[in-house]
Image (tube, rainbow, N blue to C red):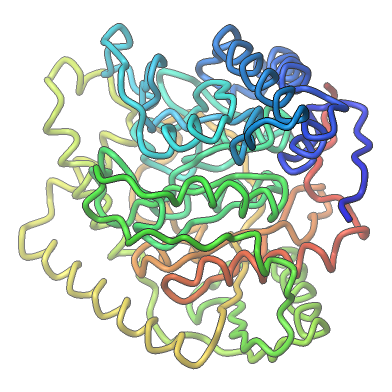
Length: 480
């Protein structure tokens, strides 16, 4: 039996809680949307999580949802899976009626915006209330969220800190109650980094499980996935996002399973590989290392067979950044000289590093990536899951674009646990597992075998359920 919801503010409810309230009639989608919009009005000037808030259209969608729920309670047709739930869309993802500016002065906001990307279309079909667009660095080019167009997005746990990136706006919004769900993208950790920094749940699904259109210029490292405040909400959202779309020729065959089924089955008997450093991460913050080790001990208590072992590959930083810089150079060459002059200095630096790569260099990177993917497929035959820290460090200072000369280490050297699994395309989640002495969230990462998305969610839920009641990591201490 689902426990009753007791929240003083609907903006603090999870999506699952809101749906329970809508079904019972104790609250309406209009109530929830107004509460979230009020939270956005109060906090967004400080956080800069949103670059566009669609007050009017959100309330119109909420009113339509409220009518559907009234009809449902009178014996009408079932409502959509997310009917009335407020959701935000990262500003790299096409959204009908809303400009998708990609954090860039090079995009013309006045052009027609008539196309929904697959994830946006699926959310509309499910009845979700689209609040607006969340901030990203220009073209999603880095693990911080700052750009010439939108400024610096900040972490709701500490306004002097970054929420991470590139889905930093999405993570800051979810953590602060500016909507319980958000869609992000992850090309080298861009869902998991900010989810870990902001104390949220984030999932990078198997590549192709969530359809994309248009495909990322950064290639097949780019995934789309949910940000949420609970694993159940992430599973609920994945049931919607994973529905097929013919526009994505790289997408996987339809998956008709329900990710909520079996979510509470636990991890007893599962074989878990525990790697504190992946064999090469030398600068893991001691408080991160300690919290994650304690979380892994809890996995053993839950009945998993945990073995400390490294997968046995070298740091693939140069592979990741090489392919990324090549993508940046590709985008750079779609811009006019006048547009190039408007770009983020970090993006410009990445593009110029990409210019230095030869065709042979890029082909070698692809071959190295293939070898890594094969090695991980073989490693995962021995284990059900791999567990690591999500990010090696807690959230660091929020800084403007161009604060540090761009190179592979500056770009991603501080997040050695995220980018390998974009290269291998495996599903990976982050769940909060503790706080530093400065009250900054720490994340625990679950990596599954390819196509093991449901298993990653199940393990994430097992850990989440076991630590519930010790401390509520998902709520930053921030005045509303």
